[in-house]
Image (cartoon, rainbow, N blue to C red; front, side, top):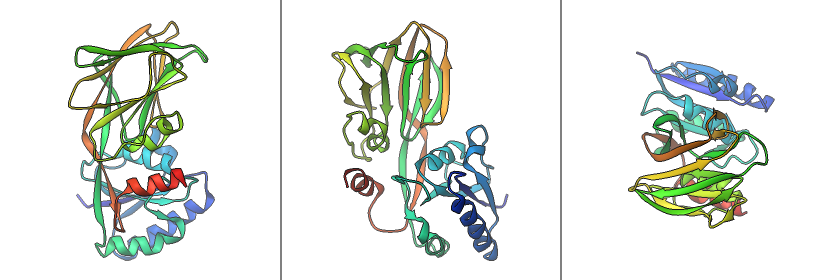
Length: 269
């Protein structure tokens, strides 16, 4: 099967669609099969299995949807910033042509990032590069939360919600809610309660242990994965388990250093 380069653009920026057409022409002039997809298409659809490289023209949301839509384990992602923050992107919009030339010349390295596997009552509901956020389906209602490490309860309390973040996601929603920045090389999960009552505080737990959160609420639960994949669960109590996914995200890097330092510099100014 011939390899495919997928070009994924955000509809929020008209320049991104124009850039996608330009990137497609550059790649096809080099004899590379390329197809264009909108980011919104990927919420409920996968990219073709022949996709070996996805070039995202948007912000972090476009990257998150693209990674969720990839099916080939070794498929790679090059993020080009046509969004606002672009914390996960590698290059800016005006560098697109130069970036493609570097990729075609093999002038890149590959940085792998852990994905979290999110399970509810024994059923996998999704994978997260950044985070999963659990809250009540009724706005303003608190949840009872109990954090377990292996078979031991280590914290409990009430909160409006809980952010379950990866090290990559530690600089995203979790950071805004008061969570710590965690090095990408650590295989850990960050649990950051939102508006906690009682003994809950942000914590970092190693994924060498079984990490579970028992959640209770009278109105069911909403779990939002990476800001776009919403799961609704009509139960009064659930066990949410988090572990390493068997799949990893693979980012192309066109300059020295990894993505962590750039994300921190952008976050902290």
